[in-house]
Structure formats: C-alpha cells, structure tokens
Length: 337
Image 1 (spheres, rainbow, N blue to C red):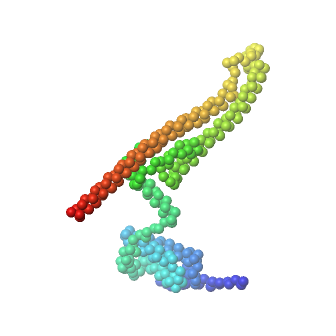
Image 2: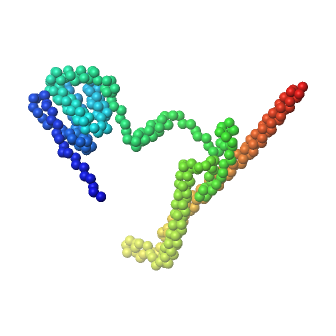
Image 3: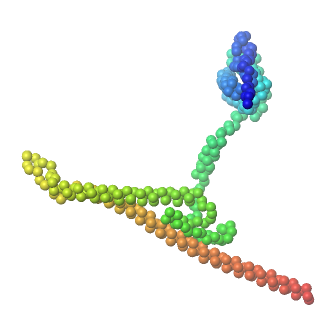
C-alpha cells in the first residue's frame, strides 16, 4: 500500500512596521499552517512580552496595571484552543500591534499612552478580573481532599457508636433487625453486620494476620537458634576445665576460673527472646478469646430482641386483623337493619 506524505509549507515571517523609532524590526515567525509546537513558542513569547511591557508602563496605578495584565491573560486564555490559521494570524497581528503601542507608551509617547488608557476603560469588567485557574484533575482531587480534611478537622469531633452499644433501639433502624454473624478470620473473631465486607475491616484483618504471622516466624527462627545456642553451651562446658583466668601481676601463677567468673550462657538470651514472643502470642490469644465472648453476647442480645420485636409485630398484626373483622361485622349489621 502506498503511503501518502503530507508536506507542510515553510514557515513564513510576518513583518510589522514599528512606529516607535521609525525602523522596521522583524517579529516572531508565524507558521503558515497550524503547527502546535511553533504556535506555542510564538504565543508564549508574545504573552511574556505583553505582560512585561504592561509592568513597565509608567504612571499607572497598581489597579490599572493589574487590570491591563488580566486583559492579556484572559485574551490568551480565550484563544488557547484556536486552530484556524486565519484567526491565529489575526490574534498575532493584534498582539504585535499592542506590543507596538506599549513600546511607544513606555518610550514616552502620549498618544499611545492615551490610546491604552482609553482601551482599558472601554474593556468589559470580566476581562479585567483575574482569570480563574483550572488545575489538572489530579491536583484538583488532592486539593479537594485537603479541603475536606481541613473541614473535618475544624468540625467538632462526634464519637462514633461502638459495636458494644448494640443492640440499637428500633427507632434507629432503617428496616428489620438483622442478627450479626460471628466468624473466624485468621484466628481472630470478627462480627459482620452486612455484606459486602467493608474495605477498612478487610485491611485490619490482613494487618493483624501479617503481624501474627511475623511473630510465629520469629518464634520458629528463635527455636532453631536455641539448638545452636545449646551446642555452644555444650562446647563451653567441655573446654571450661582447660581455661584459666588472665595472668596475675608480679609473675604470680594463673588461677583457675571459678563459677562466678563464668560468662552468661548462650541459650539465656535466646530463651528470654522466645519467652517474650510467646507472651505476646498468648496475650493476643487471650484478647481474642475475650473479644469473642463479648461479640457472642452481642449476638445473643440481638437475637433475643429480634424475637421480641417479631412477636410484638405479630401481635399488632393480629390486633389490626381483629379490628378490621369487627368493623366489617358492624357494617354488615347496620346494612341489614
């Protein structure tokens, strides 16, 4: 298949007469067709030149100078998605004409200065306001998160209801009462009230499981090191009779090591570390057992209250049914009479 090649014409320069010194100076090149990179460079250079000359304009109040710069920013923002070559050429010509006027005003030309002030007064108010900056989506999301976090921090903290405050009154329920389910997740009791399981609960379960597994791995590693420590202690026991203390001063004979001179055993620190890990695992097991009993008590109270509410609801339905039957009998008796 033949490939079609598109040729872009050479970039042509647009020359405008400069009226400040009566000389002709070359302006920034403008592409004959729309080229994003070339138009971007020319537009940025023109925008910076306009803003710079607005700041350099003498005998202007701060409010007028700010309004003049805002007009430049708003005009460039309005035309930032323009792709028509004819319109782009018109925009660039207008910008270069404004540069000429600003240069002349900075040089002291009263006519150009009066022209700029007149154009500033006739410009709409919305152009004189600072343009609203639209951040990228990611930055907007981060800014919204910071604003929400600041709003939450400023609000008074309200205590969240605890699961141990259950069962809740019937007035606080949106429907029928459901009895929660107690299940075992990695040897940890968890009370589930509804499906699907919340993400924060899943993350908490995974964190607790990793923490417990690390402790078990540490205990298994310590048990392996304990065997090595026992072998070291056995070796120290074998060579202890053949060791002596440091030589005494004044060429006195060396004395044998006594019991109080012996170094600590190798397995002492290892056994202490193993005991510490075992105590932590035992304490965690005890906490899980206590939590399981509390959660089971919640389930028992919820089930008891559900049965009571179910019986009360059935009783109310029977009373309403009897009332309707009595009303129908009364109506039939009145119609017969």
